[in-house]
Length: 96
Image (cartoon, rainbow, N blue to C red; front, side, top):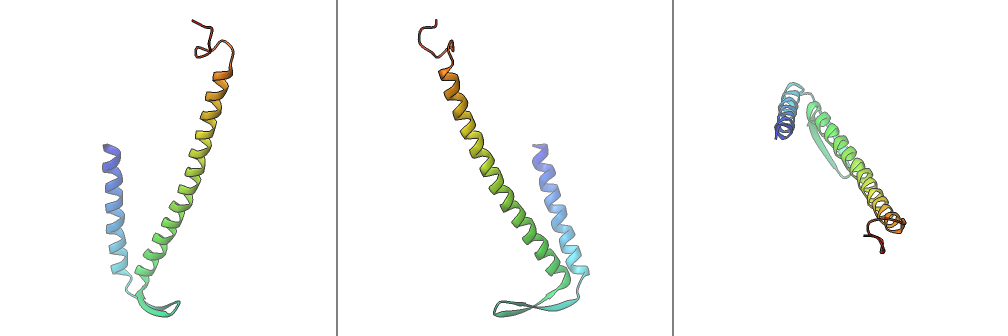
């Protein structure tokens, strides 16, 4: 519960800081993006670049976590098979 409150507070604080940063940096410049040209403030451009990097990092990290969980599942299955083959285990016939 406390962790959720802390996370929510951090997100709200970051959002407020982003709004303040964007409001204080009003210098405008043009950005060519494929077939369109946009006029944006420097603060907004930096916030967008930071958010894109954060999203890209989160996607890369989620891929790493998915591979880690897959490996963990494979190792648990291998351990279950090895324990079933072990002589004298509780699950093997002839004991008890």
